[in-house]
Image (cartoon, rainbow over all chains, first blue to last red; front, top):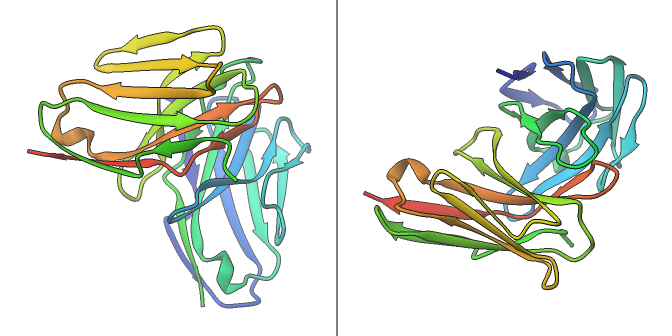
Length: 114
Length: 110
């Protein structure tokens, strides 16, 4: 079975701190994604990556950056955390098939910024 | 606004009844996918329907796609309490990027 793991289930940080969220997948997927999920707003794409060292902005990239140095690992970085970044963060990965890329999700990280 | 928008936002039914939820989208798509999310967990892929398909079945799930109306529906037949979850549609474009809707919260009462 495909497994996507995220470094923490729950995280509490202070305003202004630098925050790293790590995601690892074990199925050699080309694509990896970071979403945030907020009540009433569904899932919103922050960044995605279709290859090592490649990244593309999603719908809400402001305040975030990403890193993909190895194929299996995709990191989300909050350079200076703010309270409006309190959210559930979901990582996902998929093969690149051209049409029909089922995404496999991690369990999520619930981040609280105080 | 979201590419995929689910309707209704919330649905409550009795065990054994059928549940239907709808998804509308705005732009051309390669395919549309439905996912389930149990409370506080990650999403799980349920079914994918390509833009040249009109209907697809998987177990108790039936998905339809009407590209002329830019809409899709997910039907869960003979629902069970374990089907209680949030359901999301996701539309995928040529670039492999998926856009998720806000979801429908389904409650199945035993």
